[in-house]
Image (tube, rainbow, N blue to C red; front, top):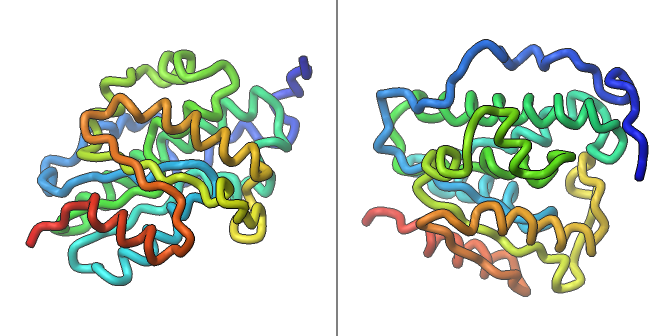
Length: 223
């Protein structure tokens, strides 16, 4: 088993300046709670980020997209998950969790909207916690039930790697998984979210247009 590196190796233990760790902002703002929070999740190469951007552009008055917190944190860090030790991994995942919540709440108070569409949700981080999901939840002082209840629906996207189409770091420099690992990561994330009362799946499609159509059908936009 690989030894843990010192806490200062690779990732600084300093909290990201965008995040105030003293603020417990888990409760949604009272205003705009009627907006449906829908998570797009899945393994690397599943099209989460592209789908969020595309749908927000096409349906901007109805959908407000929230960018992936992990990509922002790792980009600012200048290192990938596989390039830092265990202790920094724990710190970074906590930063990601708090940034995720702050972004969600900011999206809710930005004005009325039908759907807040999220590029991953708070439970995704459990797939990358060194000691596993149970310890992730324990350290963050939360539970599966609490995190699942944050969201109105969860749509799991299957990675295109199952079709032999995977561009690795070409479309996201913070990725570290090869195609096989991307598929495995997707399955771990699926297991975390599968207990949601409105869990849905979108498989890999030959074209991204077909995948977008399938996602829109599951969003159940109001007429």
